[in-house]
Length: 89
Image (tube, rainbow, N blue to C red; front, side, top):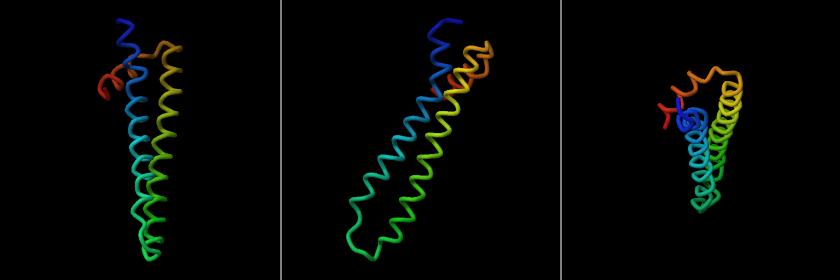
């Protein structure tokens, strides 16, 4: 197995999750512009809270999968991560 396949396997899923977290944060930050009156403040707070929970979950999941992939890289159990990472990319 070549070195480029190992890098795709280890970092493929992590990159996909990082992009998903950035999309969540971008939609959260851009939703601030849509507040026009105080009537919709409570709805905005609910939507913003859900978006921040989603972004937090994606970031934590990305950190966990990244650390697991580093562990698998150094423990020699790389086959599963290569399969998952190549499917994600």
